[in-house]
Length: 289
DNA sequence: AACGATCCCTGTTGGC
DNA sequence: TGCCAACAGGGATCGT
Image 1 (spheres, helix red, strand yellow):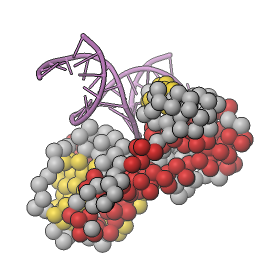
Image 2: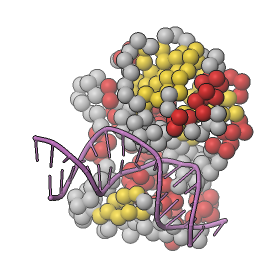
Image 3: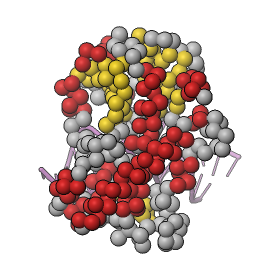
Image 4: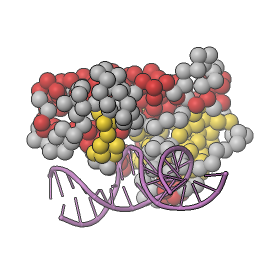
């Protein structure tokens, strides 16, 4: 199984924190300690966060050694020698893979980084909402400006939550999606967290009571951990590796997301849907007040 | 400053 | 059955 993973480590699913963390864990042992031998950035949009475009990324990465793989929210960060950081954001359709050089490429392969050891890292992103970049420490600060602490390993304490939500008018769902208070929640996990916390997504952030803020904060980690646990099963090529075929079972576990018109698993009420911050939000009008 | 709206992009889906 | 419009979403940016 380890060998199969090495030949084709691949993730398919809406990349939020659990998926990015799964990628990080999978990819790190395959890339840490290796150097980039040759790099191609084939789509200008993929390089848009680097002022110098594709050539800047290629030039900066060539010859650099990957020290480790890190993550903040949905940003995957590879620390390099010479104080550079390799950053990958998957957007909504981005995927990372580690493949042998000879393996055929998928369509929409916008980044290829050949490493020492006849393997290469590939970034596939049909909708190009994601990006790949290489940044100095100063540039990285700008890239991550406004990206809050990581929802899994840097969850702010209660006082910070209270302060950040106080008097805020936007819906709590919008505040969670904005990545500023905490980073890593996307549209799916934000809805799931709010369901677990029993808070309606349209509630103004500042309207949450003390106990609701407590519940919200406490709901984040379990939901992400659950996603992480089944996130491992969304590995597209692990599907046939697992005898019980558990691939993708997280979708079946969702309490509210994508379940408009279906019954709430807790109370049987019909799940509702509305648009918040330009995104579909799903909630149980009975469980979430 | 805060906040809502708009835009980017293509694979998938649903209606006719 | 086939075509095409609508839809999906993260985050930058713009307008109010």
